[in-house]
Image (tube, rainbow, N blue to C red; front, side):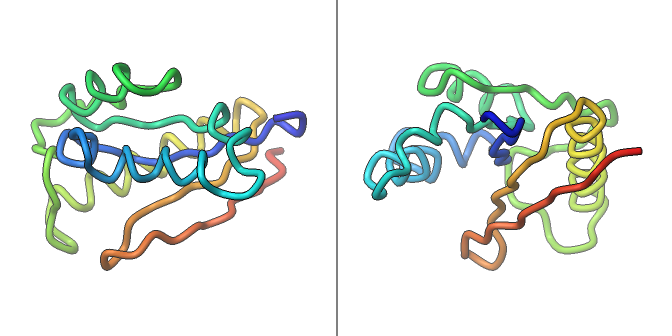
Length: 125
C-alpha cells in the first residue's frame, strides 16, 4: 500500500485445501464493501510445502516460511507444545523481518476458531 502496509496471514496445507479457510478468507475480500482492493496486499505465509503449493495456485503473493528444525506444522498444535512454540517464534521472527524492511503490517490469525485482527505498527530504530 502507499504507506508500506501489508496484510499477513499464516497457512498450512489443511488451511489451503479447496473450499477451506483460504478460499473463504480470499472471498471475504471480494465480498466486503470496498475491501477487494486490499486482496493484492495480502501475503500468505505458508508453513509447509503443501500449503505453499496450494497458495501459489490461487493467490499471487505467497511465501514459504521454511522450518529449520524437524517440526510438523501441517496440522494444529496443542498450546505450549514444542511445535506450537516453534511456530510462535517463527512468526515473530518473520514479523520482525517485515518491520526491518520498513513495512507496517496487519496480521490475521485464527485463535479459538475465531479470526482476530491484530494491528502491528512499529517505528523501527
